[in-house]
Length: 152
Image: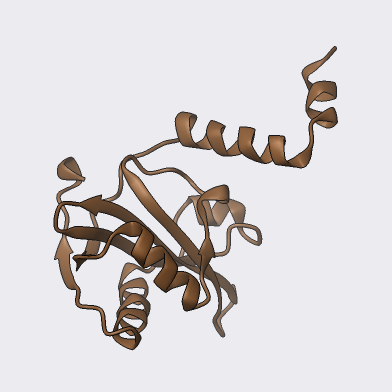
């Protein structure tokens, strides 16, 4: 039986899991050297609950896996510009002192798949500002740092 027929007969949950595992182990990558935030004394699970409360959803089903990533949250974002459809995306990496966050905004992957992959209009500063407002609303302390790509 051809692979296409096997895949067609699988339930959607199995296809979803296969796709997730394929992305996680075949397309894993190192985080870029950009500004990150440290949220001390908060685990990725605690932050996930906080982000869920603020309207984000799990984003790991449709994105690259970054080595060591423990948190992946996303929320749609509309801007009045030529693209209009964006997403706010925050990734988290557990550390001894808390969780390292890599927030950013970027073009919505379903509307602009190629430009999304090419990092067109990716904005780390805007992602940090959105994250600061979420953390401030929840009275969570944080520090902004630049991360050495060789240590993440």
